[in-house]
Length: 110
Image (cartoon, rainbow, N blue to C red; front, side, top):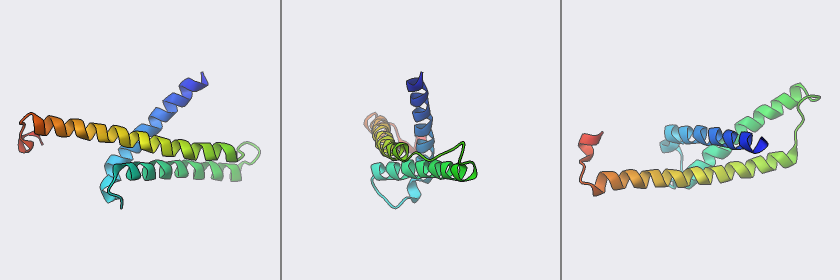
């Protein structure tokens, strides 16, 4: 049961990261998509972690920080950034192959 929830949560996290990468990817200082995806993923994780810290300050008896889980979450966000970049590269190669190898004119597609 926990593995299913963990997988669904990771998929939602990945969709959100890909959405932010699509929105702000051109504004990021890196040229490589992997660095951009890792930056977006870890930034989103840091935002969620900051919310957890605020909750633990407001209600310390209910929400308490777990350092090992935080370290694990950070590394998982880095791995998710790498996975998003791999799928992003695959998507762009498929689109490029479809547009350029089949003789479709780019002006008429967009």
